[in-house]
View 1 (cartoon, rainbow, N blue to C red):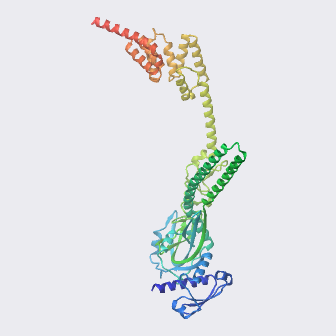
View 2 (cartoon, rainbow, N blue to C red):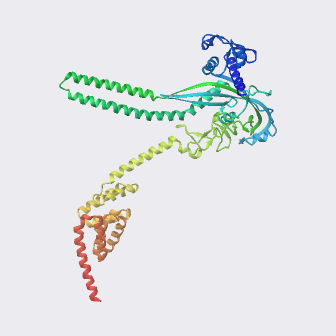
View 3 (cartoon, one colour):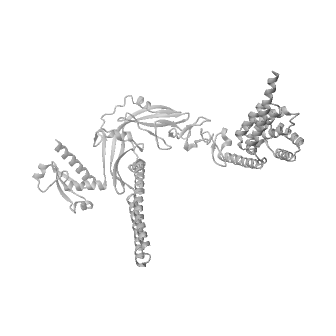
Length: 580
C-alpha cells in the first residue's frame, strides 16, 4: 500500500514538474511515459532530450529501455535539481463543498463595528477568493550556515499577510481545482503580493540576524584578543632577542625582519577572523502556490448624513470570521469601519477620527490633524495652523505652538541670566561666618532686592567698621522693617543695641536669630551674651555649650566665660541658701 502511494506521489511530482518546465509528456500505457525535454534544459540531462520513464517496477521490467523512476534515480534527481533552481508554481483549492449563506448577516454584524456611521445589509453571495503562498528559504552564512524555511501567505483580495489562515492550511485538504462554479472575485497581482511577502519576511528575519551578528561580534572580540596576545608574545620574544645582539648588526636586522613578518602575519590573521565572523543572509523563493477558497461576500450600504457608499465584507468559512477590511488611507487591516464625511473613504481608527470641535469624521487625506499640545483631533476647517512654525493647534492652545513656546523659553532664559547676574553681583557683600547664609538669602529673595538694598547693606557695614553705633542701629532697624526675614540684619541689630536700656529687645532678637540659624555658632554666642546681660546664667551656659559644639576652635575663650558663669551661679546659690 505504501509502495503504491509512493508511486503516485512520484508520478504526480514528475508530471507536474515536466509540465511546468514546458516538456512534452505522453503516457502510452499505465505508469509508462515518453518525455521530450526542451532544448534549453538538456544541459541538466547531459545533452539528452528524449527519455522513456517507468514509474512502476513491473512496468520497468517489461520495458527494459525505460528508466525506472524512484527515489535516488538519475532522472528524478535531475528533475528535483531543476525544481530547486527554477522554483515551482502551482494552483490548489481548499475543498469546502456547497456554501451555506443562511444567517450570514448576523455573523458579519457580530465581527464588524460601524463607528460614526450606519451599515444596512443588502445581500450576500458565495465567491471564489485567492491567496498566494510563498515559500522562502533563508540562509544565514558566516563560517557556518544556518537555513530556515518561511511560509508567507498573502490574501490577494486585501494584499495583507494572513498568519491565521497560514496556520489553518497546515491541516487542510487541498484539491487540484475548484469543484463548484462560483464567480471569482478580482484579485491583486502576484507581483504586488510578492512585494508584501518580501517586506514581511525582511521584518521577520531581523531578530535572527541581530542575534547572530551579536554572537559573531562577541566571538570575534574573543578570537582577536587571543590572536593579538599570541603575536604580542612573539613580538616581545623577538625584541628581547634583538636587544641581546645589538653588537651584531646582521643578527639585529634578521630579528627586525622577523618582527615585520610577525606584524604582517598578525594583520592577515585578523582580517581572516573578520571575514570568518562576517554574516551574510540570502533569500531564495523556491516555490509558490496560488490557492483558491470559497468565501461569502456580504454587501453593506454605509451612510452618515449625506455621505454614503457600498462596502463589501468577506466571511471566511474556514476561520469562521471576517477578512480584515482594508483602510483606504494606510492599507492596514481593521474590523472597525469609519466613513470620512468629506470624501467617503473607509478607514481605521488611526486614520479617521471625529473632529473635537464639529464632531465630523474626517480622514487624514482630508486634513485631519492632531493638536500639537493636547493631541485632540481636528478637521481641516477647525484646525489652526501657525503661520510661522506650521504647528497644528486648537483654540485653547493658540499660544502654545512651537514658535511661541520657543520665544517664551528664550525670554525666560534671558530673565534667568539677568537674575543670575544680579545674584552674583549681590553675593559677596558680606564676609565671614555669615557669608554662606547671606549668599543663600540673596539667591532665594533676589526678586525682592534692588540696588537700594545693596547700597543700604554697604552703608551699614561701613558704619559698623567706623563704630558709628547709633547710625548703624537706625539703618539696621529700617532694613529689618523692610526685610524681616534677613537674619544677618537682625543679628547685627541685636549686637548694636544698648545692653543696659535695650537688653530685653536684644534677647528677643537674639532668640529669633538662633532659631533661624540653629547651625551657626555666632547667633548662639550673641544669645549667650544676651542671657548673660539679662541675668539668665543657666541659659547663657547652655548657649556657650552649643557654641563649642558648632565652633570647637573657640574652646579657650568660651571656657573662660563658662568658668566665670559657673562661679556666678555658685555664689548665687549660696545667697539663696542663706535667705532660706
